[in-house]
Image: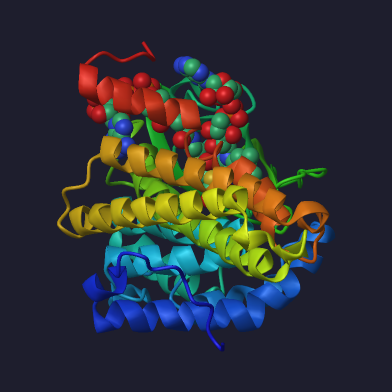
Length: 390
Ligand code: TGC
Ligand code: FAD
């Protein structure tokens, strides 16, 4: 078949609009043509395939829900989710690049930026001519970003920025970084730092066993002079970066379904073809149990993401609802990847199939954008009214 047949056990397609299906199918076709054939090689050599940036822009993956007047695709939240699902069916690292560009760079500039900043950066970010990254995490502050040490001082005609960020997706090649730092009063603000500013460097992080086709690095600020017009004027405090995370986490809740679908599809096909003891392994009860549980969990995750998308479209999705979906769906995907790998026996550990790559990628996805534990505690805080973080 020309297009990958995504599992749709509960006829979710009936709930999608024509536009949703068109957007999804265009992304699906592009992933099949331009990502799947090359991604294993790039993951093996631990390199981001930069040649796909134009294609990502064309399918609307850079700013799907940013209005067209700023170069975005002007789509709704369900289309955004479906694009993330299709990209992550190819590779979580490629989806990371799209998530960061859309939700962590374009979203804060669009939502907290001045009109001049929006006009200057958004169209170029949407076309992929300019790439961005998002600096929140620091060496000593991951789950607890409120303790960040990166800081800036008002020097009259500019700000002076000092500090360091770690684990930053796309940092090694990004043209700009949206950086979260404290002012002299300890208030968190977002600053747009541009490559080429003196004292700003972005060393790459090597030796990852996960997300190998995505470039990860540091952001180091050694007395960087940042022009005053590069401060995001319209929101400050920890809620500003956390608001961006809500958008990215929502996208990940769809993306993880894509990785799970690819693992399930591969395992199902393999189980039907692989003969042991004189019959396909798909005819054994144990393999059926694995496959039946996979499709059940994928279906539940699809319904969770779809309903969350409706709530997001209406502006009603809460942080805690988003946490539940991110946590559940990534956990679902990682468990499916582990089971699917076993269905393939020894073949499951090779790069001939995508499962082991998905499985290793998902080890990052379950940690970034708030760990599995942190999202559980966000749910706990929401239902009990007590914060376990204080
Ligand atoms: P807390 O006291 O709860 O909140 C501080 C202020 O923020 C407000 N707030 C939010 N606002 C908007 N959206 C949200 N999701 C918000 N959550 C909280 C809150 O109302 C409060 O406002 P105000 O006005 O009262 O001050 O903050 P806390 O310090 O107790 O921390 C809470 C906690 C632990 C949940 C939070 O720090 C957290 O989510 N930590 C996880 C950190 C994280 O997710 N980092 C991700 C880094 S980026 C990344 O991983 C990119 S990977 C990208 C890729 O490659 O795809
Ligand atoms: P820690 O916060 O040190 O957590 C270690 C362990 O302690 C975890 O299991 C955690 O769940 C647990 N823990 C922490 N606090 C509690 C608690 N209160 N109760 C119970 N358990 C707790 N960040 C960015 O800013 N931008 C990016 O682009 C970005 N990209 C990333 C790409 C990759 C590949 C990776 C791996 C990470 C990326 N991150 C990025 C960072 C990511 O968001 C952090 O790794 C994550 O938030 C966790 O922080 P940490 O690694 O410091 O772990």
